[in-house]
Length: 509
Image (spheres, rainbow, N blue to C red):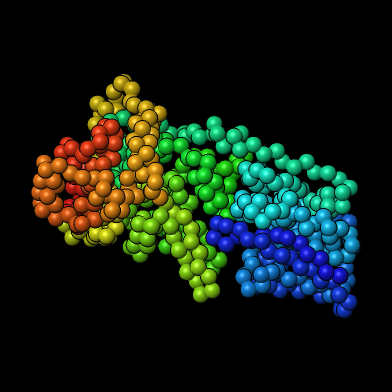
């Protein structure tokens, strides 16, 4: 007899329906799986056999063939265990076939029949609604993640026996209650705050501008000057995630299996800080079975690269595409996958290998060639894609010991959100959302300069030898500074402040 079960697999961060066809025919006992299964899928036959027996059912001693359609797409992962087991039970008339066609089924089986967690539940739940199924049967541990999708039944399952009784109508499983407002709103809080940072007022100002316009930023300073501390607090002044942004970010974390068990959605801006030993595949994504990298995990949030020159040069160069396009395309011989990767890049580095080139208290021990080699690890094209470049000096004792309170993240975020609202109104008919995303056409339209500003920028370009990309960056930053001041026009002091955030170009190159 043949039974057909509907399951799902993930391609990129989107799910597609997989038909699990199970045929039990007369012949010598055998169990074969076709439809381009990889290792974990091929091994499912042993887990399924033990789970069926240990759940109190008889495993058929016939020839069993399992087909995973579409057969021309490679299947990987352990989520097909449960649908294969249900298909075998349905093919032996232990489960009615009319009921199983209403649900998508996913789950990994342990040898005793318990259902274990899987990856990609959220994209699958979205596909359930898209393709018109009644509901989704998933491991209980993943049910909360799927519950953000309204209009479908989320059936949390613990064991194979429980699923069998549910599909036979012998036992009811209460669908998980869905409440988007409860799982999303009111959970956007951060553990870091800018009121914990003493001094560094000009760096805080630069980070405020970066947050207001979505600009990338690099901080250069000696060890212990607070670069990492400042970067960690940047998400706390960014605008709150919208539900659409939270959903897209959560899909990436779901595919990677990184969704926290007590959360249905990622409700705060991500902050990713990979070590400088990360590979290009770890940073951008890829692998034998392509997975999102750190740039995608930082989508709608912050990617922090500490000790930037210590990263391998080829790793840094692959950042160019996501910085420009906001997405990563991974091409393979038989497929091409695209992952979203729109993030704010925050980089930090020392001014020299020992770190004390600009420190007035400690003497630098590096030779000139060592300093040049160290700085040359960052290419000009990459540096051009970083809008703001800020020097972070050592914090003075009087600032550290000062009892005066520092401005909180909430106060800074109010100004940032006001500037973002002006940008939202400006770009409401466009596909961009902040000043950093403006192209040449938008820059020409929204960043006109008066005569004084034009003259000032012309002199700065000639004196500093800035590139055309740096010219556009200055205009974008000027527009953001004007937005923070609620100014319709870009004034000379806006351009002047923007120019000072490019003063590392010649020094680093």
